[in-house]
Image (cartoon, rainbow, N blue to C red; front, side, top):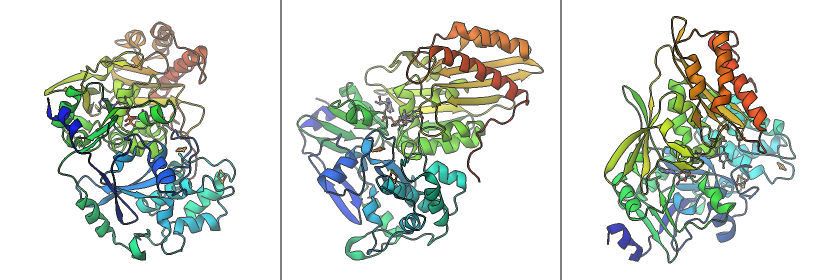
Length: 502
Ligand SMILES: Cc1cc2nc3c(=O)[nH]c(=O)nc-3n(C[C@H](O)[C@H](O)[C@H](O)COP(=O)(O)OP(=O)(O)OC[C@H]3O[C@@H](n4cnc5c(N)ncnc54)[C@H](O)[C@@H]3O)c2cc1C
Ligand code: FES
Ligand code: FES
């Protein structure tokens, strides 16, 4: 019996996390119990609300503080508690709306919400307060755009957003650097003490919660992760849980064995080498996007429109790729820039181009027990033009009807290389090989682009569903290719929606 098969017989471990300065220890927990269920049903902290239970409305927003990569400071981020599984809190500090009650006085963001009349029925208010609290702790002077972005995952159906944005603007520069949080015996705790407390919770060993029917493992090394998956190839690999959370809350699926990647060192790498951006599969979308957008600024709008900050703070690029939704937003752009995946199974690793990863609807090239260790994105090349366009009904927090990406390299006026990939057009995200072949080697002009637009019919036969009809999808994708052509010629430069004032 392998080590990891034998752990099934060991004593169950405990989850340990900080709440209001106290260390909470929990054993015998269903590994897929959500943080929201724990708050509302186990400890009766009902300030945090449930609206949708699928990460869409933000009523359940809480804040997590955890050690940064160097382990010497706190990283603060808002997440959706309705789809976050409780064991993933291990080693972190949980901050809820009740935590802001420091001795009966309102936190500055709460006071601003009151002063600006930013609440009516109040159901959404705790979620807005927590998103604003996370903004306040991380950005002392946000622009209007940053405020809009920070609130993109919070829905209010009765107040309207203007007073809430006013509240966000009025709170700037109030008590910067405070540590306004409820602590034991009403004491204020300095940030350094909070760091030390989390340092004290760091584990040398992996977390293993073993119940009669369900178990949860949080290995710390890639070796251990691969051993567990070799012994249990049917286990569910859990990263941010922003897809998997809904399997539980909406589809009521039972997950008997969950293996969490969040603590695995090698999967948390985020580096830029001489040739590639190297992104561990457990790096959050928020952290990965900062580095990607720095090197590929044309992807800024795409990533700003990817879900909402709480989803991007929990979700990972690895999860987006492995989940392989035909309308996943990151993959078209990653495909056209030539991204590859480092896959690991046992002690073997192999590198596979992303455009060879998808086989059919929800079928990918991962072998039993194999997992994504790292995503390798080549650095930009000199004169290549890159764009990715997401079409959805709303700007923020919406699923794409179609999502396209283009990468063009010209030599003089001839096309040296052209790649196009599309989401929402087939059972998987795919390159438009027929369309690409019409273009390469030809002059980049109106005639060539018209031929390519025509060839798209041979690449895709889209379906009709609630997001868009087949006809719309094909026409819109053809139009986006025309738009890319105009952008590449500099004729139409407004590629970013202007909204909000800076
Ligand atoms: C409200 C909401 C809005 C969303 N908006 C968008 C959007 O705009 N665009 C978009 O593309 N997606 C969106 N999503 C989907 C989701 O957020 C993304 O797919 C996200 O990147 C998933 O990452 P995760 O870490 O949460 O994955 P998880 O839910 O943890 O896992 C997803 C899948 O990947 C597998 N997996 C995870 N890591 C690995 C690994 N290392 N190796 C092998 N398999 C692995 C899991 O087993 C599972 O099958 C949204 C989701 C929600 C709830
Ligand atoms: S309850 Fe709606 S996002 Fe969590
Ligand atoms: S105040 Fe009622 S939903 Fe926002």
